Length: 193
Image (cartoon, rainbow, N blue to C red; front, side, top):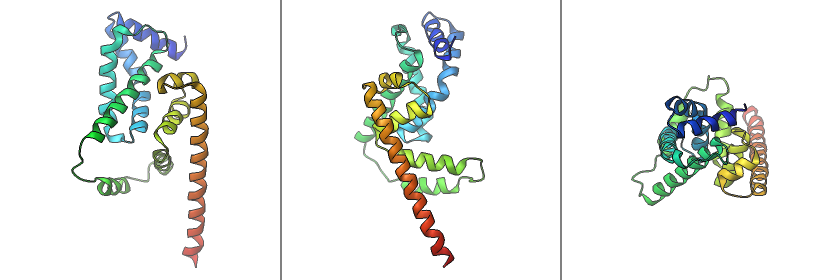
């Protein structure tokens, strides 16, 4: 049985009241949900709250889950709605202060000695610059490994639109990398001179 089939079977068993299946379902999907909401919301620190809210909503909705799509696709659709609801709530709430300065300072203070740290930070920063729809399509297909058809279900758009968004996201990321490399190359001679 494929992973998606197992996850769907666990969701259906959980719907029937199997407590062990609930635990297996959550354990099997939690890391994907966390990565997805962290990227989509641009808020890695708030991702745990979004993950918790996603699973609360999913567990409340389990009685209506019929297994027509994979449970993973169904769950990521719930995660998407959870993020959108949070973004709408935050947009409607007045901000007391701008936290960009202290967030930047905290990010600079993090250890760069971790393997892959620089690449992870760079990718995160590049993804953050993408428009929401392109970032979502890229994260779903390239980082979480969802097939384009399932990503389309999660995003609520046609498969062709997902393909287009991923292609444009790749183009934008490549362009941003090339710009960063040119800027770095221009700084090296300036420092030597």
